[in-house]
Image 1 (spheres, one colour):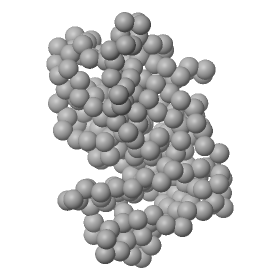
Image 2 (cartoon, rainbow, N blue to C red):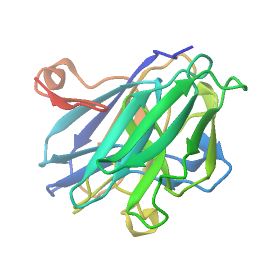
Image 3 (cartoon, helix red, strand yellow):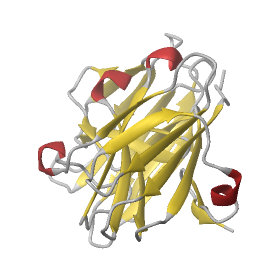
Image 4 (tube, rainbow, N blue to C red):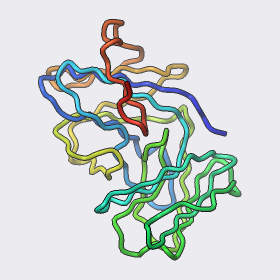
Length: 228
């Protein structure tokens, strides 16, 4: 059954620099039969004194992202019990998912890559959360991928800020990123605040910003982007 739990992470740029903030999921959030790469999940630019409210739900999805050119992608909502198995196919028009069904083992997400998938490509296939990619593996023919999400209580996230040029869905080289802040939601908490100080240090704690900030913050929904 879909999780549907709503979460929010408030980012406050109190540094002296403009740049790009990125939230990505930590490797312990999923186990897989092939080592997955971390994808840029929530990505947006921020000037000094800007606040962004990142919002998402614990709903899983299947994703493929062809880095192109041209770039293309597909996201299919998944349910860990009733629709947790799918096929990745390819034809003259590109990649597509097909045959989504209930897998034989609840709690895991399975992707069967068909023989039509090109052996040489620029595509990752994997899983996402709240309609945005989180983890991906290089696509290849006749390979089955199995992803086992961690329990909701064990999920953790990283937030980083810098002069980044990547976009949501790109594969991350986390070794090249600026120091990150670790975000863990305590039991019963669905709202956290991550502030980057003028010394470029992270302060992360439960709660929400003051009311005056709430009214001016940008709202970014996972899989959608900034919304009015």
